[in-house]
Length: 399
Image (tube, rainbow, N blue to C red; front, side, top):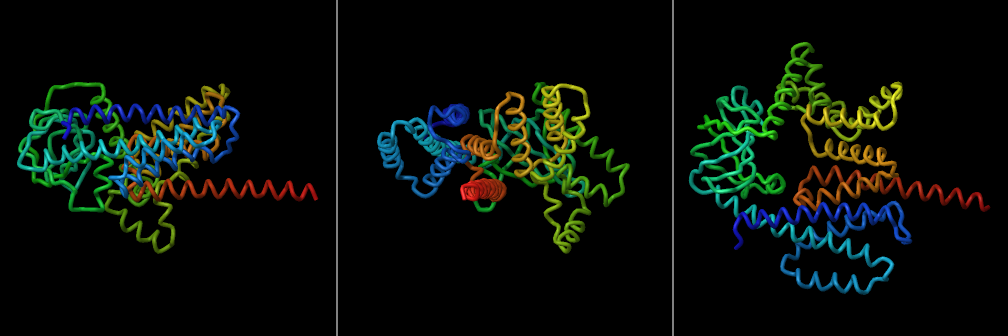
C-alpha cells in the first residue's frame, strides 16, 4: 500500500488534471471546430463523469474492461467527434482514478487517527457556539503525532476553549471517533475529509506563534461576521432577527428558529427558510437595479457586483444550494466581463463537471443530489419546451 505523502501527491496531480479537463471542456464547447453542437452538448462530459462514478461504486473490479471499451469507443466513433469523445472518456477515467486514490488515502488517514490517543497540530478554521456554554471547533489538521497528515477534525467541547478561528495550535491527548458506523454521515465525511469527531469536557491545547496570511484571513472574516451578527441581534427584535439570520445569513442555530420553522411548516412555506438560488437571484436583481443608476462603465459595475457577492459569501453561513447559485453567478459575471455568451445550461454543466472531477464524493450527498439534479431537470425542461415552442411557431408560419 502506498504511503500517505505519496497518495497526497497523486491526489494533487489528479486535481490539477481535473482543472485542466474543465478548462479544456470550456474551450471545446465554445469552439465547435465545425461540429454541430447545441445548448445541451456540454452535458456530455458530465454524463461521462457520472458514469465513471457509477462504475466505481458498482463495478470496482471491472476497470480493465472499462478502459478497453473506452479505447474501442474512441477509435470507432467518426473522426469529426473523436476529440469530444476522447475528452468525455478522459473525464470518466479521471474521476474513477480520483475515487480510487482519494478513498485509499482517506482510509489510511482514518486508520492512523482512530486508535489510541494522539497529538494534533492544526489551524482552527471555525468556532461556533454549541450547547449554550460550549463550543464546536473545526480544525484543519496538518500533523498527527509530528507526522504529516492532512484532514479535518471536529471537537464538541462543553466548556469554551481559549482558542479562536485563525489560531495555530497543538491539541494534546485527543481521540477521534470515525464515521464508519454511521452510513448517513459517510458521504459527508468523505467529501470534507472529516477524519473524526470528539466530544469532551475541555480541550488541552497550546497556541503556536505561527502566523500566515491564510490564518489572518480566517481570523478577520470570522470576527467580522460575528461582529455583524451581534450588532444586528442587539438592534433588532428577536423574531425579526431570527428570520433575518436564517434567510439572509444562513445561521439557523438560534433557539427561536425551531418554533419559527414549525409555524412555516403549518403554513406550507418551509421552503422560504431554505436559502437557495432564488434568494441569490433576488439579491442580485436588487443590486443590479441599484447599479444601473450609477454613471460608470459596465466593466466597473461587473467588478462591483463581483465584490458584493464575495463580501456576502464571507459574511454568511453557506450551504450547497447557496454555493451552487453563487458560483453560477460568478460564472455569468466572468462571461459578461469577457464578452462571451453563456447559457444557463452551459454554466451549470461546467460547474457540475468541475465539482465532480475535483471532489467526486459530492455525488453521494443528498443535498448535492437534490440541488443539482432538480436544477438540471428544470433547465432541460425549459430548454426543450422552448425548442418545442419555436418548432410549433415555424410550423404555423409554414402553414
